[in-house]
Image 1 (tube, helix red, strand yellow):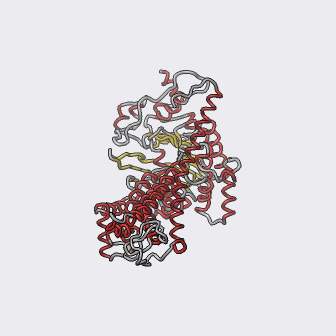
Image 2 (cartoon, each protein chain N blue to C red):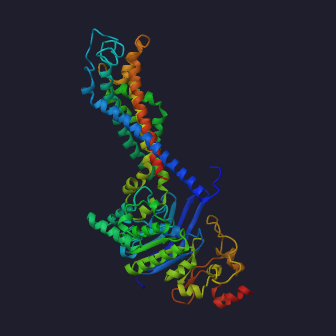
Image 3 (cartoon, each protein chain N blue to C red):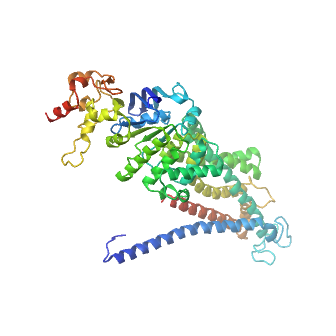
Length: 296
Length: 338
């Protein structure tokens, strides 16, 4: 706004009212991001849960007469792969695995990393030094190499992929949470809480956590996308879901051999990954705006 | 009146910082009696807040080096300075409570007032939900918040500064503490609200019979509310006594200068300030710490320090070896004009 001076008070009021209305609209628009993200994720979850109803065939059923059928072939909405398995059904069932990774792997690392960061930041001293050196140790390794090493050691399976993600991904949460906690710890409301005789656990979880949780929650949305892509990558490398179980990454991997002749084999699972990824990103953005708006 | 509740004996709180050791509190002794309001006055950085926080055990453990004794008499004759954390935790809130300078930051911004008040009510007592809620609403009503049941749902940003300080007082009093440490409770409030909060504190103190330590840099506030005053300068107590003694017959040049600096109602003219600034608490000068700013300084003051010396009045002592020589308050006034 260049100037607030106007010819008359009524004009000032009008300008202010216009501005206020604009601000309300922008708040609504920010909410829209969140709602759109939740809606997209809702569609994905519903589709995956209703897979037995929606799927036209079993994901592993082989239609030997129609291998590599193009999308919109009668009976095969999204076409078939090289074995004649229905791509639409495989996408639906495969989504179960990918969404399970998004939620299962992310929630555990979110909770674990947050707890460790909170304890390290609040207690400080040796506990903090020890935990943060441990975090540094994990960060020192290339992330994917570490995951691959763990999966290779435990044997390739979906559960072992979860374990590998649990072991390695908590470090980001711990680091974010520790930084936030160190700042919050210096706030007067923490001092006031301690002056009332509240114990360290109460101060940590009821006074510091509500003020610092937004950062890790927002990060967890980004991380969920990362985990889906990671699962896809591991599937692509043959370390995740094992054939014949459908998984988007594994499907992309299978499809690459036919990329020039049957592009849909790799592209459609890729689009599914993008769809869920965008949903999580929108939720993350929307939450960030919403939680930050609370400060104002 | 004469039963001691809290005794602080020769308290030293040294803080390890990057620049060196800050001797924030250097040999402070004070006593709070039952049902008494003790004022601690002094300019910024003289150790008032550090004294309070050391008593409460709220100083950061990594940087604080403390010695001396803090005895809370109902808890026994053992110093609580080295008490186990769990023991201290049981005392804080239930026996010793503290309210802070800036009410805007002393409440958790993301939790409602009622939530935080209920937490305080439940912290040291076993109450059913309706009992706790009734007590919380009663407390809010007691500190003068209108429509308390409705305001329980509000968040701190929906309260004004004065209302927040009221809510904080309600939280501090939730477990009926025996001693309330009020660390500059009115500094960030405007004068009207300041007056309301002070009368509220005094009223609550008289109703409950608790003791109170009121910390302020404002001598006017202190004299209005307190029974006894402790004047601090550069981490030390320089004078203590009853309000009447301190106001009418201050013995320490610093107390005198503080009183002189109070604006006189109805009189225009230059405000009188104390020249110079307090010494660094890292490189503490030899001799009397006030010597560089004292109007009555002589050479000996710069080389040797004294302890608190009884003035002859009951419970009145000043840390100035020339107090007898410098005479009574009348003499002060004349030496001013000379």
